[in-house]
Image (cartoon, rainbow, N blue to C red; front, top):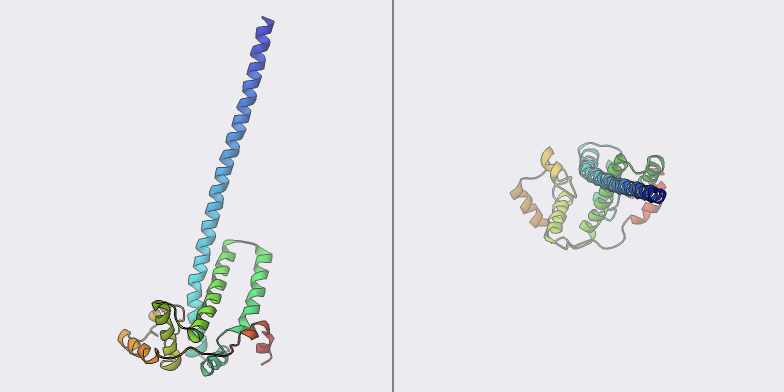
Length: 216
């Protein structure tokens, strides 16, 4: 009888121990699944915020190029008119270092947050604009879409300086009425289609000397 009781006791203890291990294992699995879901949700949120920043850049681009450079005379106007006089001055070189410094400060102070993701989208939009603007003036298009965007911007430079302020997109030109009528735009694009890409040095070296803009 004593032996039977001891066997039952240790059997119960063993089963209880296994049950605790099972509960703990189940809890860990549940936690891992919940953690994965949270991580996926956070990544999706950051991606949405990043895309929102990219979309916001399109309006910032129009504001700088249209309102601040052409429609109104502001502190931006002299530099932009310099680009119209000499398209080799293709980069907004004075903005690269300040944006890099500001981005480092934002990350250092706030870390990775939804607002930081929006800021990254804005910065990515700016960098994309700079590279695309360079290709418009210095490279031959590699596809039909790039060819349309290139000739559209060249129309702004050569035929219609008070229209077509969007470089990477035409959304805000349509919204604010600065897009030429479609048939007229097609004629203007045909007139500049044979314009050869520029050669020679750009102003990219000034990215590393932003103080030259302050000293002017």
